[in-house]
Amino acid sequence: MKFIKGVLQSVFIQVLSTVFITILGIGTSSAINTGNFFNYLSGISIQIWILIFIFSIVIVGLAWQIWYDP
Image (cartoon, rainbow, N blue to C red):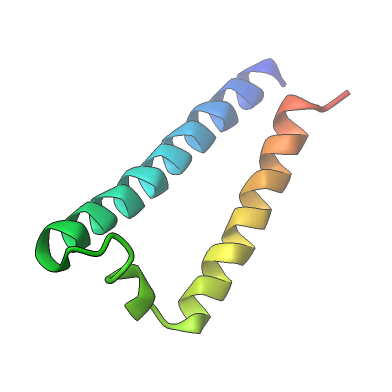
């Protein structure tokens, strides 16, 4: 169980950092090209934002299970 917990923690950290770096890169690119950090992010459809929200809830739930498992 300790091995699985370590692997899941590693994967969680990698996924979280990849999402963070991607959003930061999109925002920076938008700021350079348009002068507004959120300009490109506002072009994303509502369905994608809903999927991102659901994915975030799943990730937080998994993280909760990994770190706070009794």
